[in-house]
Image (cartoon, rainbow, N blue to C red; front, side):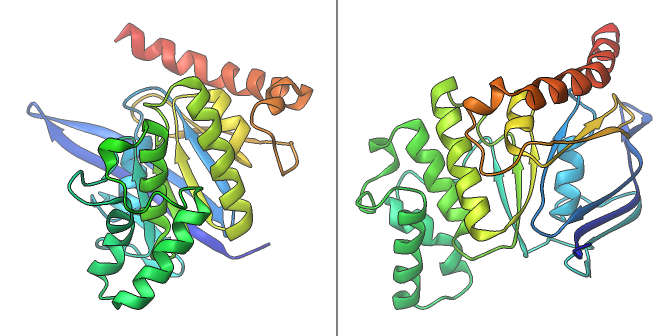
Length: 261
């Protein structure tokens, strides 16, 4: 077995809302292997994004522990990349200036920064667009800029919270395929939150189903589809259908519970 990139042990998250205690996550334990692509699915409010934020060190856990690359997460985790549905592309900076922003923050010199930015733009198929401004780009191209920005400083672990949720169906497929290519080339560990069950199965090697609040890990489905995958054609495979049936059987009652509240 490879070493764990992320080890989550007995994690709880409680907070006070409207004068009462709310349990967002209840004793969650999970091991994510180095180089693994894991997807989190579950009903709204089940704690998927909360757990992602705790791995990133953005919010504290109430109890338990999270260890990333042998480092306990007790503050902002500067060893992960984080991409959300709302990108952090700055409209007043060019594409290459946006991609180089994390390197500026880390004090990387101009020559090395320029070299790294060029590599990232080629990686995400934006070579030749470095001087463009975000307003001149399509939604899919803006998302590629955000992806390149996240990858620029070389994090080994990528946290992605519904990164393609705002894209139309065709662009979503393009970005999914590009992400799989980058993952296979660079051997990153990816933790991917989505409400799209088909997206989770098409991308991930394991899909984790969370129960409704309080969020617990209810079910884990290994996806028995070899890589490389074609994100369009994979949906017609018997293994995809079997995984979808298994996951929907576990997920649908949790969604129904939420609707009854």
